[in-house]
Amino acid sequence: MTLPLALSATEWLGLFVHFLSLSLLAVGGAIATAPDMHRYLVDERHWLSDAQFSSSIALAQAAPGPNVLFVAVLGWNVGVNAAGGMAAGLHAWGLGALGMALAMLGIMLPSTTLTFAAARWGHRNRELRVVRAFKQGLAPIVVAMLIATGWILAGGHGGPWAQWPLWLLAIASAVLVWRTQIHLLWVLAGGAVLGALGWV
Image (tube, rainbow, N blue to C red; front, top):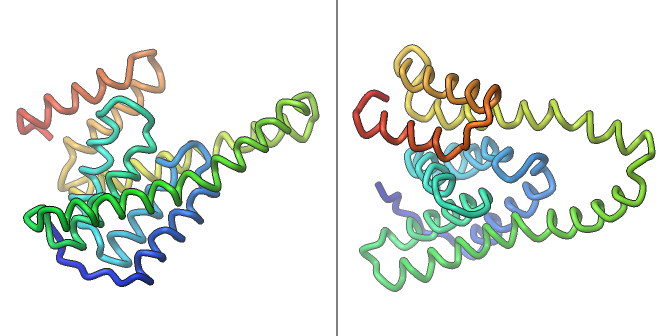
């Protein structure tokens, strides 16, 4: 489904600035900021539908490469919606590329710069107590943000009682990844097969 939009230059700038600010909150990777992206793009701005948001993340996660690519897909879909859908031809390709570039530049620029500087400093001072405490303190924050991301993605298809097979699969997948060394692609493939069979 395509959402008809007409984004002004200010709104395009807002998209860039929002991803720019999220970049500095991306502790544990860009995926940890997905709940706020959902709030901004779906709930607040209505630039993407729930289905577009979830499918953007699922598509990027299933593809090889860095998981931050889901941000590019989100930006692409915002641009395509702004053009009125892929039927707009070159206009849709142009705005899709613009959305993708703004989202990726926003999410990558601050975090890359800060990570480069902080990693060099942290490596030089890795024996300091404050550095070790900082690393250990971040772990529960990252776990909580990833759980929030899973909750947002599964919640887009209905609550736990309405879609219990989906929620059961999400919980089973999380436990499987946590307690075993199974590769994530096998878990994704299993979910795809169950989805194709109509079980979730």
